[in-house]
Image (cartoon, rainbow, N blue to C red; front, top):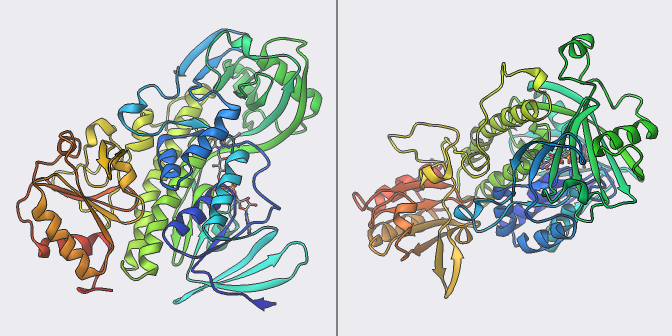
Length: 548
Ligand SMILES: Cc1cc2nc3c(=O)[nH]c(=O)nc-3n(C[C@H](O)[C@H](O)[C@H](O)COP(=O)(O)OP(=O)(O)OC[C@H]3O[C@@H](n4cnc5c(N)ncnc54)[C@H](O)[C@@H]3O)c2cc1C
């Protein structure tokens, strides 16, 4: 056993969320080591639908263009989401006729489709380019915490050699079965196992796109007496995958009653290539269509959330913290947003600009959103795939804009206003710069170019004021200097800015590095360095008075 250098943060798991964490930590100047059991990045497409907030994060990390270009090689940029009897059959429902309808009002980006096995290499390359260390075929075999840090045993899976690594913090992005979560004794709660599902990867010797008769290809749910699941079909029309969640006619109560133990009814058990072919043809809706099965992956559709996202110096992120059925495309997105929430907090605590209490706000902020996401993915699973489960214990559906960019935080790292109703979500058209919500998108002129307000955030705290907001601008700059906090200030002259952010001309808005409004002053009343000092100390969870 040998001892290795000490990274500030050890990331266990180098898939979608581990790699995103590495990129975002590096952007905050945090050195990190990623360990991953596999030989490389993902080999299956899995996550494909990337939501607005995630694309905004990729934009902030300088990756939006490369990700969009790669996604468009495979998918139509605005593919929709509908439900059909089969590709050749009748349309039953349309959930998103166009993935990006109405998006421009809220964001400078768009939602997109890119397969996880295409996205991960882009994240890997960015993480390595930014200086993160990645080790493949390396397993984290144990973790021990003490007041000053964490000692991990890492095992080289090729040679069996072990070494210990000391880090200040650990991010466990080690997936649904998270060995780290198990070691910490953190349980999962929720709806549990929904179905033993399969994904059938295939190519067809004919173009399947004409079967959709001009309806957008994106995600096509399939509902018929043989199976329920969904297709993701490449824009080529002859390649893609079919997820099968349920087999059997679950619309018939006597069938459901006949299999009381069936999650539903275990298509994954003993699946053969012949059976996969039958299911695929039933989903396409053309009996003898020439298709070739390339692979079949088995997985469990579950809807559960971890009881805690933090244990001392160890944080759970991604599927380790919450696992959802794929309906709504939340799983990987929520994980990337966990990483986004945690990275700046680790950055500021490690450099001494924030108090360690800031790290406790990761669980305070992300766990309620994780639980909401689990419930909303479950509700979409029930309504789109498994209506036989009924609506008992199902939350009413929350619209997608509210889920993607309308969730709100209530923690020690936000100064809520006296009239705040502490709702977990609000439509972005309504929240208007309310503390705890995502700072709204407004096009503004910056250094001679038109950018989004969102482009001003991502690294430091950012103060936005209108031209008559200089009293707050000076007060906050003075306080930030006293506290040793890097701060950027922008005077926004665009007339729509104050209303979009819910302030009068002399007001001010302080945006956290994750683009969430931490505090705002509706007008210039009470602007003073002392008040600003108090606000910043609260947002940073600082218990001292002075600088770093
Ligand atoms: C069919 C399907 C469709 C989906 N569609 C979408 C979608 O459209 N949008 C979306 O957002 N999500 C989607 N998802 C979900 C998405 O794939 C997951 O949420 C995402 O992969 C979670 O990423 P993760 O990094 O948290 O975990 P994982 O991808 O599970 O990665 C965990 C990694 O940790 C490694 N690991 C585990 N233990 C150790 C250890 N001790 N030491 C070292 N390494 C370790 C594993 O090898 C693994 O690579 C879909 C999933 C499926 C199955």
